[in-house]
Length: 195
Image 1 (tube, rainbow, N blue to C red):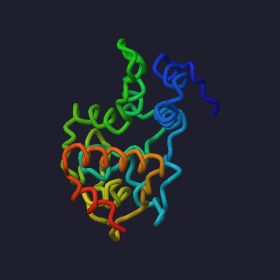
Image 2 (image 1 turned 90 degrees about the horizontal axis):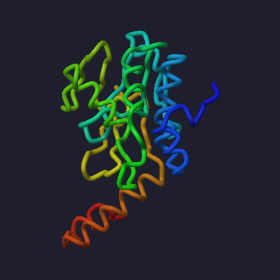
Image 3 (image 1 turned 135 degrees about the vertical axis):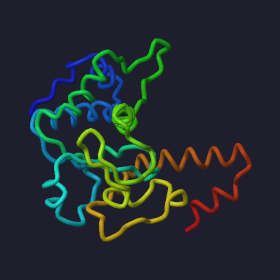
Image 4 (image 1 turned 180 degrees about the vertical axis):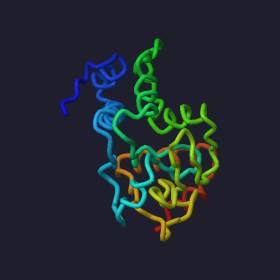
C-alpha cells in the first residue's frame, strides 16, 4: 500500500516537521482500516502464537502505565468502524498549533479517549468495549519504559514484549534526570539508574 503524506493537514504538517512517529500513527490506522489484520511495532518481541486471540476478534491492550491503550499491538478487521472513527479524529486537526507548538496527542491517548466514549475504564483490567477486547498489560506490554514504576509483569499470558525504542527510552530517562535534579530528588535518580 502506498501512503500519501498529503492525505490530510495533520499528517502533512507532521511529515514536514519531520515528526514521523505521528505520520506512522495515522498510517497504521489507515492500513488496518484498508486491509485489516494484526499490527505490531517493529520493536515487539513475539513470544507466542497470536492465533487464539485473533480467533476472538478485534483487540488491543493496556500500556505499561495501565492508564491507556498501547497502540503497538492492534488487531482489527478490514473496515472496522472503530478504526474509521480514529482516522476521522485527525480530519479537523492540525499538527502545528496556532502558537507554532506541536499537537503531540499520541495515538495511545487518542484511541483511549475514543474508547472512553463507549465505557472504557483506565484501570488496567481486561474488558470488552465496543466489541473490542482490551487485554491487561501482561499480554503485550509487560515491561514499562520506566522499570521502577511498574515491575516486570511477564506471565504465561505474554504474547509479545514491547521493548521500546532506544531513542524513546533515552528521552524518558533524560526527563527524569532533569526532574530529579530540579526537585532535589537525586536519590530517585540513583535508584532508577543504578547498575
